[in-house]
Length: 384
Image: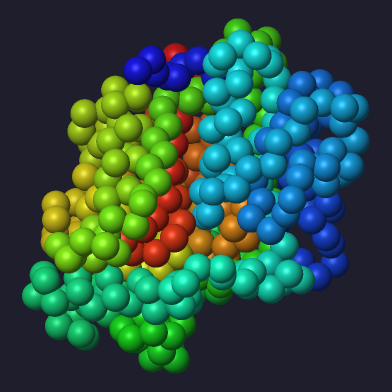
């Protein structure tokens, strides 16, 4: 399979402030994100030749067309669970790489405050909220790797405090206050053993990316960012059907990471990656991702967490913008919000949360439930 490595570039990005945005609607959020991206790239709405809109609770691409006043260009609305925003970027990149369009737009948006937490589930099996699903992983992980309840909760609390600290350095984050390990441990229980601060909130937000060819990018700016690889793995419920599924790893993430690493030519991700944004919908999800991505050995993430390896000043900073724990999770927007942070980090424009001299960054999304996920991984790099 031919790689997309270095065939497309991001030349502009925008991201709204996330939170309970009662004062605006979806269209306002898209305008806020898109016009930051236009200004960043030195382009206008009329320059966009096609667009992809990632949104879970939507129907067509028309809201984006109306928001930014495009003139009859193709706009496709895509949905792929929590990877919907990343899916919009992936489709936009492939269109440019294929030579179909030269300048395209990818937008992710969701207004969770007004629209509720979801929509009716038509499946036969009863639904369960995400904290209760990931609680299964936390309990099983503690058991399999010999962590007591108290020890396991303290390890997860370090992830929550790390991400919330990073969020205090980001004016676009929803939650701005520091929390302590004791705050996490003493918070109300959401789903044993996950407490309130172990789980992300819903929120409102949007993010946008302008994608073009490297040749056009060079004429627009010096610090454009190149796509190095994508991975998208969609489960078929294998873990829910097979009795050997252990709940302590996510096959979809393992496979999405493998695809992205192969495309980008990465052999040792722990050493080669400089910064990452991952799907910390619950703290246990972030811990499992460390191992599924090949950054920590199976059952050994505890050691890396305690050593600060994933902190801002560590060997591989994870969620330097604060992650879902700080931003909340407007489903269609989160994937592009993650790419926005990697874009800023690679440009050296992340302010007080800036990682030292990053060259390669990664994003990861995870949608579904243990045993049946959709997982997306993107890898980005500085221009040569």
